[in-house]
Image (tube, rainbow, N blue to C red; front, side, top):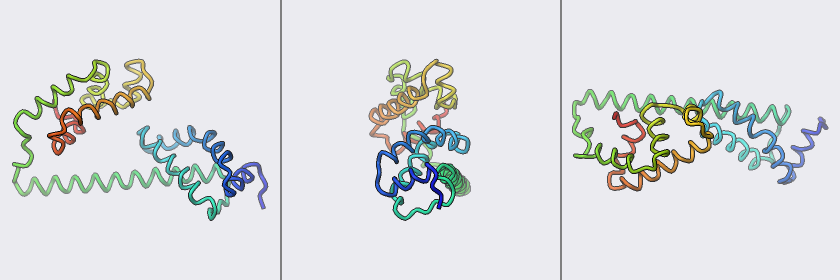
Length: 193
């Protein structure tokens, strides 16, 4: 039986030792997040993947068999979760593409016409955002910059950019809630303006 310190930590986790689990989490969260980012190229998705891996580790700790090192197991699990995420994204993308092609062939475009004045209302809601939040939103949605690029350009932390985008989307949803069925599409698609 392997009696390495790493194996000892895993045995402690198996025995419900939260401190051992927290230690493994603290020591490995950032490297695992960076590893997931290599696959996803999206910080939030990478964070979610790593958190899912740690959650499953904790939930399955009593019957989990790790034949390699715990670190190797975590990296392999993050890799597998990242690849699964990419596969699901491809399936969703393919389905959306198929739906778009099908609707184009049907020739009924009436459902694609936004309500009168909706684009103007969206623009007004964006203009009502605080200046820095508006700038971050426009760089992300209209110019297609990634959070890291925005952070570098505006000399901010990536976390600040993420927070401001979350607040911007919440404020826009609140401002345009009567059009919720249409607005999300225009906001997420960059609305073409």
